[in-house]
Amino acid sequence: MEERLPLEYAALGLLMRGPQHGYQLHQDFVRYFGPIWHCGRSQFYAALKALEAAGLVTSSQEPQEGRPPRHVLHITPAGQQAFLEWLHAPVLSVRQMRVEFLSKLRLFDLLDLPGATALIEAQLAVCDERLARLETARRAGRANDFDELVYTFRKGQLEAVRSWLEQCRRRYT
Image (tube, rainbow, N blue to C red; front, side, top):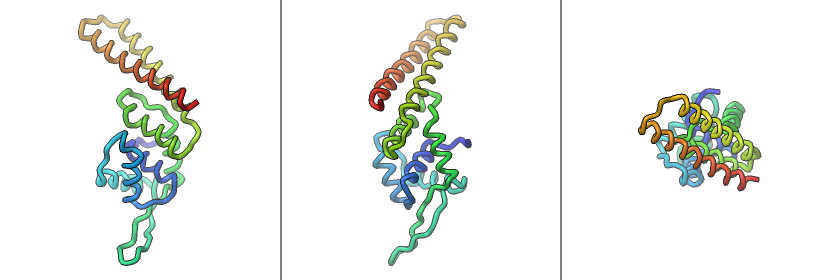
């Protein structure tokens, strides 16, 4: 699967609900993802163009009375497959939790799709693996005071994410 931006996957997710024109898609993005992150219209339209260039989205023209035709976007089967693969895959870094993981949970809810619990379980497993690797690296190295600060910071982040994921698991079960 080619790596795409989370914004592109969010747009694909919105198109899973049916064909829409770009302006409405951006309005829906702001409505559903506004609490997660901000995206200007030009950035959103650039993501739509990238999806169309990749063959994940097609477009058609819809006539409008007294106005230029409206550009309506449709998700392709390849777009659906790419979206679903992304949706069900855990993120690999704590940094991606704030935008990408939250967006995935939002899309599970918005599209009423099964699998959120499995995603949360997979994400917990990623956190556990990261915690274990962090501890292994700590034991293997000769830590100075700064290294210990870095270790406690990263460990604290992972533990906080893990605790939050436990809350998510309770919500979705």
